[in-house]
Length: 364
Length: 77
Image 1 (cartoon, helix red, strand yellow):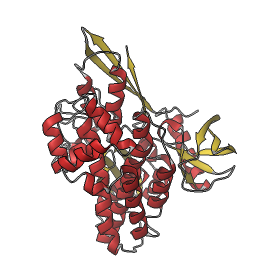
Image 2 (cartoon, helix red, strand yellow):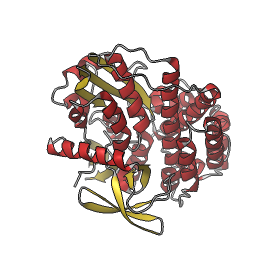
Image 3 (cartoon, each protein chain N blue to C red):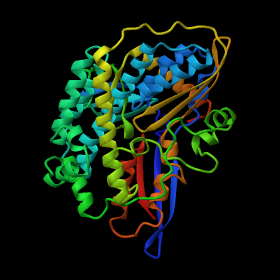
Image 4 (cartoon, each protein chain N blue to C red):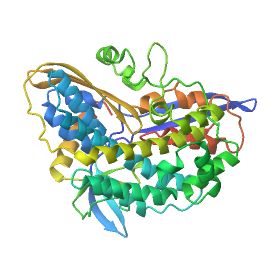
């Protein structure tokens, strides 16, 4: 059997507080090594079949890295198409979380029909782009009970939306506020720089044993990557962070903001979507880095090509930052008040940080 | 990384598929799948393995399974 990747969070309490947080991950961080000896095109074709949540982002990061290694300059059209694929994946991932997981977290039965419709719509992003985006916007407006852009325009409309509680998503977030958990899990905020860690290329190049890929840092700092880091200057997110720090509510709101921003960017991009063949393969040699902001955060690929084949391939995924043993999840849980509902509070924080594998929480 | 294993559908009943990969069978919901599927098709499962996320063409699934077998042989999983 193929082992299932998972993350297990253990919380040790003492004197009424969380005194220790363990993060055990069985995530497979070195599988890219087996790409050695393959042609880059084989790798690009393989990636979407082995990554169910982030296939488009993986494909885009691979294409960027391979082009950089070959010193090829991608056409603006190619870059647009990659961006569109990644945005559609981002909409599907966040949308599905809201539809399926947020309803369950609110203690309500999840109606999966809109989740399926959203996936169907986003799968058609290349064939019928304008209709696909219009349909996705319609579905999310139904799921949220109002157009995402209107709900997230600022603190006031957001509070009014919570107060109305017309949908499971609004009721989940209102419940979080009512229970006093809006700021739960707040900790030091070290957002990922927009261009990635300054030493990324070097650290990935030197990562012979895979330790960096499993637990990355930058000069000892563990960045947070994903929606909160990307949208920390958005008016609503900034207002919620001013009140609740990096707690559950700002994080969950940032995911909605990320979804709405992806939909808005898609609306603009699909107005004039190019039709372009993929660039021609070449036998170039060299080293290249590909960086993509995937739904969950920064995804980095590093490839080294020799005689037209992969000599070395390394991947660093966003979950390794956010669920780092000294990362934002662990920091947010450390010192939290113990109590009967600690496990539930920790689960909410896990969902807000959105790991890409199953994640358990146990209070020891 | 969030590796997914293409799994072959061996039975379908009431929107639930029994799928097989690497000699292990499990059950997953087909509720979120955009494509129609039948016994013999390959799907990849979402995180936690409780639902089928995507249908994968057979040739792509077999190539992915070969690759994943190599990952296992190399002790990387």
